[in-house]
Image (tube, rainbow, N blue to C red; front, top):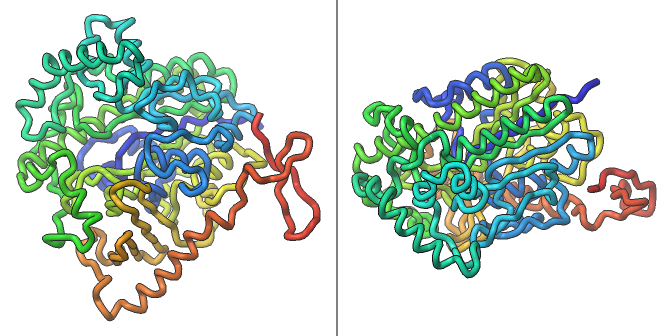
Length: 514
């Protein structure tokens, strides 16, 4: 049987609740909604760690942050860890990746490519926009180079450009004054504004262009095309016409804070992200913010439409499986917060997961509780890979064909950084228990209280529930330690061997990287 192609698309900082197929009333995702209608939508899919680099490492390795070591942003993914791309390569797929990888520190120059992660072709770009995209603009659209500089992040230019680093910083500051600052000056919050970049050479379009070219060149063989968009990550800066596509007055207001002050300073200390408090109680500004956010989402959705059109033109659409997800969500003002991290509320931690295409049932909504740990075994299962390295998650493919999977609790962890750490347990029966570094807790019944307005952790009538969930939290955290590490598996003739017995006994060859 011929292999199906796989198009794996990721957006950055986009929660499930902002897609039409997940209940949003804003018409920002017609292409994604169509993929969901013609495929399967997972309603309870959570980010294992709702921050970019840690969760991306989990998605690609199938392992918890304690195992892969990407416990926060700006670290290097260990080159000895196998990824699902390695497995697909071993099975004969030609692999390409374009856009945001986040497997290396943003303060250092981007790697030339990510072949060590399992890509035959790859062109990276990151949040700071330095590197291949900026160089492409300078080469192909020199008249727009200063505009492109104006949207680049002021990172460590000495680390990025060596002796020319200071010159680059001066160029960027000049470009920002000319092109970016005027747009910020007319906005109620400097973190939301219209992008000075034309959509035709925007980073989002460029990522899609690379994917379109890859598909056209490789449509005669089984391929995996990974497109990873940097948007709708903050700053909230859609280009024209997406900056005015949605009427701010038509935007819902954020979910309100249920308290005047949170029990733990781990949450209180994150309320003023980038000066958000200046507009946190201004309804018109909040609606404008959301209109910008939805504009960025629609921009990505239109680009996904281009990918679908290319597959159809190449005659391979019917032989392709789409997998769409995100690394985490964005609070977008809900409960007083922005972005992600220690805020384990729905908007930040529940992500879209849509699987559509060849052999996938149509119009199926799946309520099974799952997490980004499950993507590795799911994607390799979709590709009919017989052997994979040890992973902590389970394939979700049986759910596509009406088969049952045992219900189980999942763990959501914040990164280990200066914000403080949070462990959250989500259960099949709808509980959310969050435990913070200072031993403070939150307890929500998500089935009865989906907007998370009623913290039950201090209600004595729920003491037995809290005790039970704390035990379950300990058990689910132990899962990483119960799963073998790939690096310690014995080898025979270059093959990794999985030990099947506690004592000396038969070992089965499983899988090895090239």
